[in-house]
Amino acid sequence: MVLFYPIIPLFSFVRQSPLRPSQPQTSKIAGRDDIWAPDVSIHNGLYHAYYSVSTFGSQNSGIGLATRRTLEPGSWTDRGLVINSTTGDLFNAIDPNFHLDE
Image 1 (cartoon, rainbow, N blue to C red):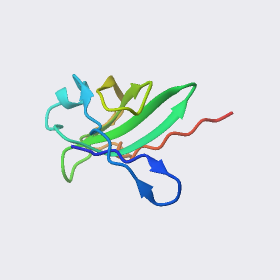
Image 2: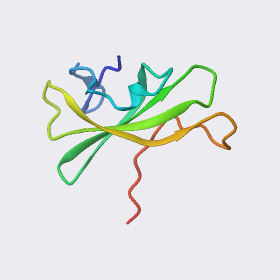
Image 3: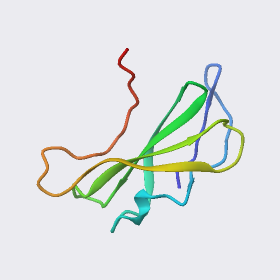
Image 4: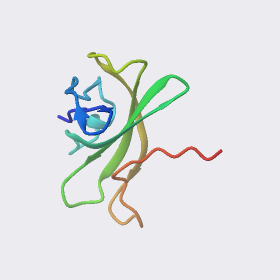
């Protein structure tokens, strides 16, 4: 379970509901049952939470996306797998970060 702490002015944190997407699509992938390393950003009034799922010590990993319109307590809507990696790939799909190239 990943807890979400939005940043309030300089070092004040407020505990919010966990980032636990409804019906997570990425957790249906064999060996992936935990989400971690979320990156939350807002774009066009919609919060985007990119998160990692992985089997420990392998390249069997993926990055998923969950969205919601508010940071009030409640469920995130899982949008599924964005990218994944498997054994032998030249990369490991972990530690997401949102970047908008304008």
